[in-house]
Image (cartoon, rainbow, N blue to C red; front, top):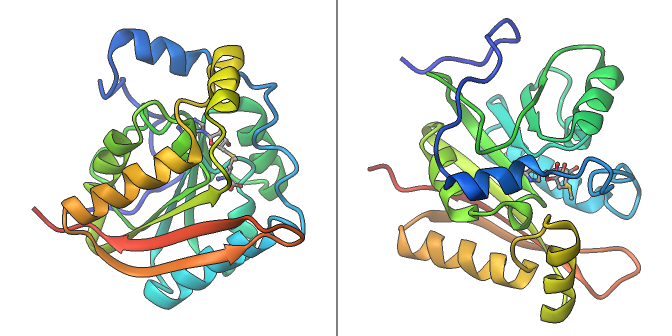
Length: 225
Ligand SMILES: C[S@@+](CC[C@H](N)C(=O)[O-])C[C@H]1O[C@@H](n2cnc3c(N)ncnc32)[C@H](O)[C@@H]1O
């Protein structure tokens, strides 16, 4: 029987072995000083949170939400007060900051790969500008598709900017934070949804204020096995 997450649950369990040992070490080399999660509660970023909150409101207004790589849990501010929200976040700084802001325990300090949901399931699982930081985005999507309740949705947001392969490789080499470019991640996610017959309910392009770039955001239902 699927369960709701409760703050009294134990902390995450053992590693789920989605990654080879050398890859797991790369995840552990997460750089908390990188700043990727800082300054996101801004007017420039607001449209993507608003778009995701609208999607949740439209498709599963009273459902539970799991925000994978939630940063400082900025999305929580855009959901209704009564929303059943859980964020998971590998940055100690960001998860501490989220907990301090809301003075409650709805953000877990762990990676998407390590998170052990046990028998809990969600109506909506969000990857908001996260997947291109992960070593194996498709394995993560596969893992979380299995954590949906019946009829549940996965929301993915990926910022669309011109692909600069040299810059991506340089950033990867310097910080080992970005495994792939946004463009490559977009293609991988789209191909997976089409190949595995996910029902794409919403597919929106949200303009970034003051820029020609945009966020591409999908809400999709994975096909049940
Ligand atoms: C650009 S920030 C987005 C934060 C948040 N989703 C938001 O939109 O406010 C990228 C986030 O991905 C998280 N992240 C990176 N690798 C991750 C992983 N393997 N599992 C879960 N989260 C990860 C980072 O810690 C960071 O908070």
